[in-house]
Structures are given as structure tokens and as C-alpha cells.
Length: 369
Image 1 (spheres, rainbow, N blue to C red):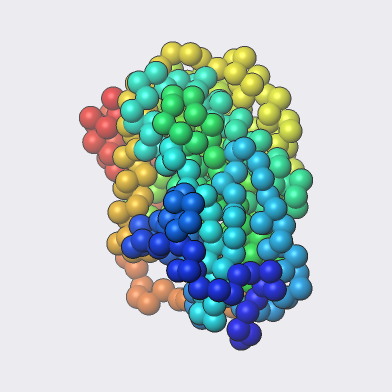
Image 2 (cartoon, rainbow, N blue to C red; image 1 turned 120 degrees about the horizontal axis):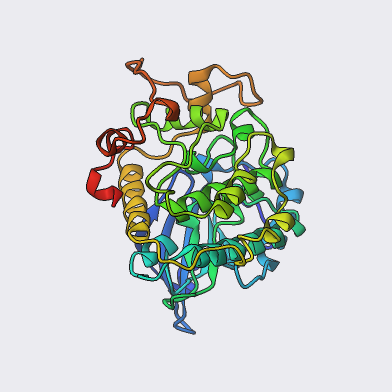
């Protein structure tokens, strides 16, 4: 392994410029710290990626080109990377701190949160992704944790973070094999194809479903993440009642045209931006009571679950299903055989029975109000 991957990275000590705080979150690839610039007193976020665990220096010229591209990305709906530091053990990606924090957490306090508001959020996300695609960057990790609120105002701009991770992966720096939230991963990725513009569109469709219901579309209470992957591969989802009783048909049409199994049949980003619901012309103004709180609770539960067991690797899931893909050589096997439980699919749930529905979705009947 080489000592340095990027000619353009800063080799001076990070602490010379920043007061770095204690870790505030961690994931399968990185540890996140808050930081303050010693000179400007501005707030930043530092993502530390350990080389010995996750990095390789295969294609350094390509990686350097992408590092320069990442540092140039500037868009009002994208959290910018301001610097990349590097020492012999770690790469440190420095990003601006977004004052509004995680969008899902803020929406818990927005009493007038509506379809119209959700459509505005999705327009911002689509605008950010359209810009990234023009820069030949696939996000590949669109999920609630990476969707931020620009400020604390009700209609704050939405800001997309972590756009650079897939770029590092595809340019020979980050090892492949780790994925994001299983509910947001496109089915073709689970079949071994690389992330694409179409897979980003899928993730935006799932995000829309969640924003309108406070519920993920591919639940598998009995089999956990692996069962969710199975549902994703089949594109097995419903507009679950009572959560979608008051959601407009236009919104459901928008989701259905993004969350569809065949990548080529999904709307493009440009087409999605022109959809009547996304433009706000066909989005309801009526407040969606309780949805904001469910979104905040969902994010909290996800964080607690991640802290307990970490993120699943794609390789582990593919090992279970014995799927032939470019990831055939799976390093991480399941250590112990797991008890086989019958998976509950959406066609087996009694949607007219609130108690049965709540049990299938691992919720209480109070959560469904």
C-alpha cells in the first residue's frame, strides 16, 4: 500500500487548522467528527476514513482526477467538500457544517408538513443529483442520514451530503463491498451491477415514499436486512393503508415511475423534475399529521440499530442468496447458520386489521395514527 493516494491532498496536520471534537457518528467506512476552524471560527464536519481497513491505491491517477472534481463541486443543494487532508493512516474529508441538521429530525417540528413540502424537498434532491450526474458522479448512497436541512426555517433548502463516497469507490480508492441503507439500494446493484444514474433515481423514489408515509417500502420484520434485500430484488412493495389513504394518486404515480424493477423504465432525473407532482402543481397542501414524527423516530431507530450491529455488507447478503455476481469472491461469510423464518410479504398482510398491520411492520397501533 502506498503512503499517499492524492497529490492534491493536504499533508499538514489537520489539528494545525481545526479543533476536532469527539466522534459524533460512525459508519462502515468512516468516523464523523465536528470541527471548528481555528482561524475563522466556522463550523465543519470531518469524515475520517482509515486506509488500512478500507482504502487501496490501485488507480492513483484516476483517483487524483476524481479528488480534484470532488473539491470543485459547488451547488446550492450539495454539501461541499472544502479540503481533503491525508496522512499515512487516514484520509480526512472536510465538509461545511449544514446548520439545519438532518432533515428527518427537523420535520418532526413542522406542523404544516405536507405533500407540497415533500415535493419541494424532492425537487432539491433531484436538482443536486442532476448536477452530480453532469459531473459524471453517481451518488449511490441517497438515504435519510445524507439528506440535510439548509437551516431551521419551514421551507429551508434541502442539502445532499456524502456525494463523494461512490466516486472514490469507482476510482480505485475505496474497496467495493459496502452499501448504504438496505431499503434504498436499487435491485440491480444487489445483482452485481455497478451504481448508475438509474440506481440514484430508484433511491430518490424510495425517499419520496418514506417522506410521504414515515414508513419504508420494503419491510421484513422476520428476516431483517436480508429479507429487505429480498423484497427489493423483487420490487415487492405496496402503498400501505392507512398510511397512504390521504396521499394523492399523483404522488403515488411519481413513486411508481421511479421505484420500478427495470432501470431503463424509470424516469430520468430531468423527466422526474417535470412530473406534475414534483413541480408542486399536483401536490396536496393538507398537512400530513404524524408523518414528521414518524420520520424522526425512524432515523433514531436506524441509528440505534446501526450502533448495535453495524451495517450489512453487500457481500454478506449475496453470500446468503448464492447470487452469481462480480462480487462472487465474498470475504465475509455468515459465522453461524441462522434460524429460517417464514418471510412476511406484503400480499400476506391483512391491511384492514390495524393490529395485524402494526405487528407486520414492527410498530404499535399508536405509531400508525
